[in-house]
Length: 423
Image 1 (spheres, rainbow, N blue to C red):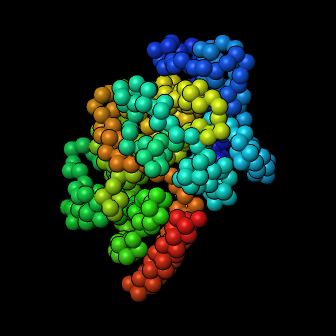
Image 2 (image 1 turned 180 degrees about the vertical axis):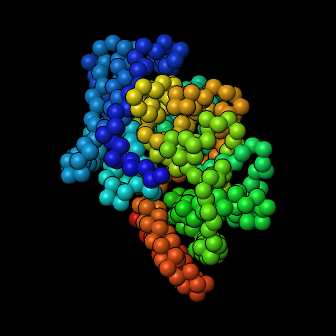
Image 3 (image 1 turned 90 degrees about the horizontal axis):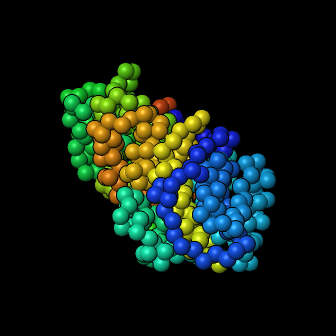
């Protein structure tokens, strides 16, 4: 199901944590002076959660305030606000803290350029965000907590942490426990294993869905630090030609599924049964990647970085996933937690799952993740190209037609990634 990320800005996201004990929300000592305010920029869709976090923060720091700017949802108002915020950043008057979303490639095209930071990796390089290493080294959470630390790489540059991922999503293969798991280190090995299997349902599930994630087959596609394009058009093209020429089968009543680990994805259709195995899907390089959909960072110009870090870490608290009232309680609608305790709370809140067997089955896929990445404008474009390619391939499924089409798409993608890394 395609997630309408910005359309979901109108949903109410409600979480009551203002009555939490100090054990539920970590306390740190701050140096904020009486009467000073932290400034926070965030999305309108996070308003419910943000109000409760700010209320709790202020209860722990009497006399200290937090001024929140919620980004408008109307496109023109939103762009006007972006211009104002960017001008403030350039003049050294940016916000103390940013908690924002980075929608996946399936978002509607009209919403893709409506982000304050359209290239988060480049923003880290350019000095928009402050390094968090000093605060993380003193924070016991990073030693004792169960955050999925492999995701932190998405928010690093030259060995320093600038961004904290707050939510993610990744592809999983869900299969009944009594049957064999998919074998292999890479996506192509998985695909061959499925094609050669006597299990027709498993084969059909993989064949029908693997091309839908084709723009992710080689993530991370660029390395900003080395200015290198990782996308290998020959490897991608060879596999895509094979996939497009493979005849899809009837998918009705199939218990096997390949799709996203998110509320409206695979987990929503399987977790309640208690009989599933979940495997994180590898890419063509053998890496199991998650796209970061919500993140937080401290503004370089902030004069209250320690206090901003404390507030930021409340947004990473697993208790955010612990309760459900009228809507989703995750940071972003449809997004997946970034800690094991968050996953447990998430399963209990949304599906009333307390069975440790089911929880551990889901956590197995979560623990397999190798790294995270931010979807870029080039990724959006590549996703559109592959979508159009599949439609054209249905009209001309001959080997020659598919070969020409796939080669053209791969060359366009390589060009887009080259432009991106050189910006």
